[in-house]
Image 1: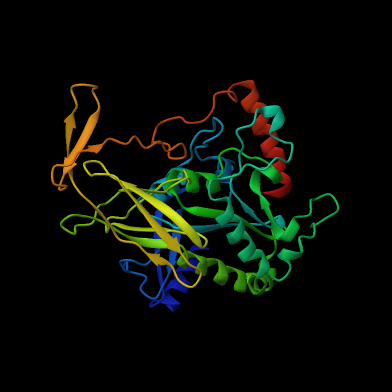
Image 2: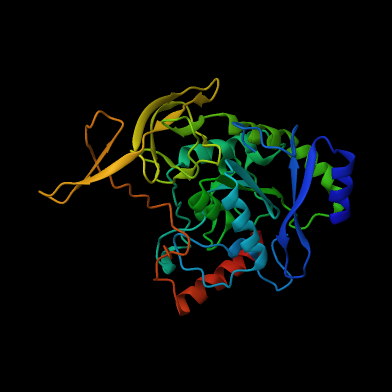
Length: 364
């Protein structure tokens, strides 16, 4: 694989950049290949194997919002976590084999252990967008949209898509982690009924999925995008951005950039950062092109109201005070904070993880 990636990068030097984000437990490079018209530089304003040698399923090794994940974090998992925390990814597709379906968040469920395997969907705040992204892929696929089962023992999927938890819930998946922790909209793409197809079949799968992959990637150009700057026009890095009533937040890049995939409609954007007055701005998304929305935040000074102990903001506002707003972000866990429920610890966690392992061996 390393030789193939190096050869491909050398062959297409103007379109690819190859780099490693860390090492596996066997000391092998974890390669990332950038495919772009400018692979070695970031253009401001434009978005950019499961088991390791120890036998750990890396797609069950990430922090989980709903359940306690007791599996020891692996070096490959830590490398990916660090990588995605440094780059504000907007859209992602996780490629799998073993079924023919586009699966979207949530993969896990807050239900108790004995209710977790009853084919109940676990709906995310961006369910409309995730269904749209999944349908975009399945409709442009050679056969996925038909929703036919791979075998009589496997389920059929209406229109070739499914909510992850409705199919089967899992703890510690990368899909939910990237969405909840980093605001990246990721779906899982099961591309073949054969879990481990031979290399000779790869050209066939490429032809089946080429149009779907291109259409899927193009979806990054819908919704809203823009910059968050201060009153002097300087970019604000790591400002928190959230679409009102959609409780998964995301962050700006070091250039102040942000992106969010949304379907046509009227929305309100909430933007806040330490030391600045929070802002809420209404905007409209249309089908034809993404909405450009630039946001200016004004620096603040805190004043304490002695009468009731409340906090007031004052800044470049003519001295007019702003009441302090507490932003509750239930889907924005902080690093190192355990947000998972404790009901799945101990023996119940072991039973649940064992069931997940059994299902994984069937579907992936």
